[in-house]
Length: 290
Image (cartoon, rainbow, N blue to C red; front, side, top):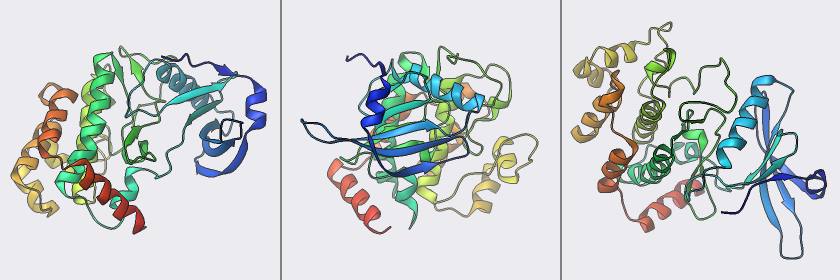
């Protein structure tokens, strides 16, 4: 594996910024062009926007994780600035999974094909002791060949620990498992909970609940938590087949050990997925509709 190293300031000075791909309160992602004799190369630069300690920790943590993992469905890190405030990442031109459900939900076979790729990457990570910690639609990119890439490893862990620990709750509300609010959760099982949320959104077009934060008293989450599934399915008015319902009952369990592992869920999606040709055709069609 090629060693990933800090890049000199001269490298960043030669890059030509093309556009802003995304911008948040504390970080921004820029499209940058490198011109060289062997051909031009596009990168996504993820840079600290403000000097906020949590942002600096996230970027440093992301670098430490991506240095050690390499997989066809994980974003590639090419290098980073010497002060750890900027990552040079693979550019994925087709956006995120959010783009695919803007017009309508996905058929189960298409969603299964997508999450088959996601769980391949997760199984690889989990087998080596790594967890992602912030799986959601916007953290799954679509590359130039219409393959998925996991990104944003700021909350990722190795053997349950971050490169630099911080007090912030890991993950994004609406995707996190209920035990994330308690000490020492099983982060592999919290990843799997998030995958189930993503699958639910892809095939229904809406989240299964808004929040499972105990302070928020979300009515849909309360039904799930209390195993009142008949009432839940009636209230939510979603056309989901029984096999998928059974999967959600298992994956949204408040008992983490009841959830499938990445490997077992990968096999479930494998049986449900469509062909690669059909998947690419559907992705192209939906991107063209935007």
